[in-house]
Image 1 (tube, rainbow, N blue to C red):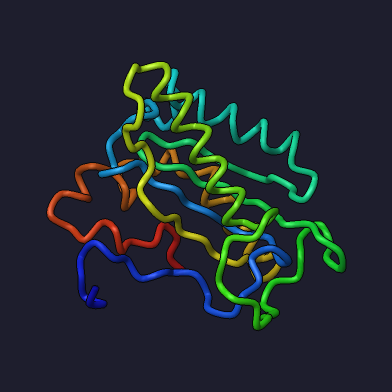
Image 2: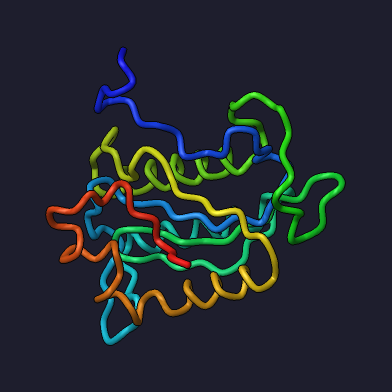
Amino acid sequence: MPNDDPRRRRSIRLKDFDYARYGPFFVTICVEDRKCLFGAVMEGQMQLNHFGQIVESEWLRGAEVRREAVFDAYVVMPNHFHGIVSILNSGTEALGRAGAHSRAPLRRQSRSLGAMIAQFKATTTRRINEDRGTPGTVVWQRNYYEHVIRDERDLERIRDYIAANPARWEEDGYHPSRLAGAGAHSRAPLRD
C-alpha cells in the first residue's frame, strides 16, 4: 500500500521515545468525527451526559487500579477528552523524566502510555455501546495526541489549559463551528 493512501495514517509518536518509561504526558483523545457525544458546555461549565459520565468514571477507575501511573488534571469535553498522566517505573519520579530516548522498537508495551490509552478507549467504547445498544460502533477516533511535559512550568500551563477548557469552548479548535471545512484531524489542542 503506498504511503499516500488516505486509509493509512502516519504515526505521531516520537520515533525513539520510550513511552513505557517516561512521563508525564498531556493526552487528548477525540470522538470519531468530532461528534458531541459526552454532553454540552453551558455557561462555561461542562455538563456531562450519561456517556460523559462513563468516560469520567473510567478515567477515575484507571487512577485507582493503575499502580504504574499517576493521574492528574483532566476534563471531559463534548467531543474530546484531555488528561495528564505520569508513568511510574523504576528510575523515574512521580513527574517522570521527560526527554530521554531509547532505541526500543515502536510497539505498545504493557504499562505504557499507549496501552493505557488503548484500554481506556476500549472500555469506554464497550460501555457506551452497551448502553446505547450499538455494539461494534466506533466511539473514538483512531489515534490520540500526546505531549511530553518537559518541566513544572509546562505542567502548570497545561493544568491551567485543562481547567479553562470549558469556559473557552466557543473558541476551542474542537468546537463544531470551528471544525466545518477545516483539516480537523491535524489540529493540536494546545498552542505555545
